[in-house]
Image (cartoon, rainbow, N blue to C red; front, side, top):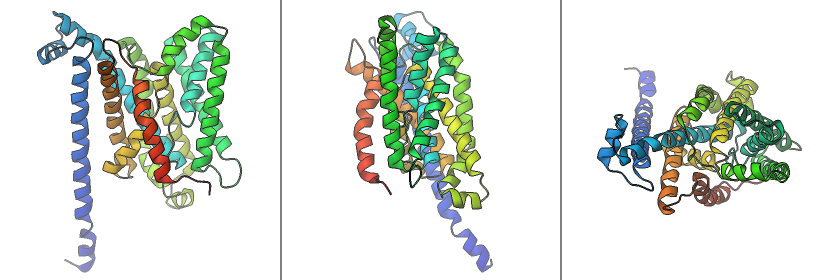
Length: 347
């Protein structure tokens, strides 16, 4: 073997080892998600036995426990889809903006989707699920453009701190507009109050079927943009030098993230911190390569939301806490930790 061939073969072993380790962690994450899904259909106001879970999954509904499992299945499936969508959206936003604090809630994207839903309900006068989902996606896109434009003003461009401040200001403005629109409409405010907390309790198969195509398209766009996200992490100049069309990559990945966020917000409400917490935790296992980070984030995000839903049902029996409350309790301290760890400052 020549010296060149030997040198080329040396780094191959660590690369294969890293790939094997990542695969093992991904399989473990999928296994944990499966366990959480079983717990989600088994635990609630009325606990059921493992036998009733498996018989219900086989199509039987002869007992009260089996009927309870079948009723919880749409809720579990929706938690998986929304959690994966929010985590993928957060990971894509962090890659596109090169901002470790990027998250649909922190950057005001979820707030824009919420405002668009309220406008659709109160001013347009429609509650059709398809109309609400379309409005949420458009609102999320408009909010993303507004926050990035405001955060890009001044010297230095769109720094992490400026984007975070712009997102916080936009979120406050959107929330104020929502209150102003709902204030004269007590009937609409009552229904919106439960939606804005964020939850998966009202899941039905019809609603899932409606939102599923948008989630699949958004996820596919983000996953197919993984190589471009890796290039963006090197900086725009170097990415362009490597042959990456920077503007197109950023627009396509952003579009996928906005579709995911808008569709998830339309069906489950503005659930915060999933897109912030999950990508950071997954980087510890998958590393910075988005070809691994994005699938890890989808699985972990699904697991986090399913787990949060189970916890919310257990700690407040016979009632329940919506998942938006549980994720906020977990995510707020994590957000503070990230700010201190990253030492985000104006450059």
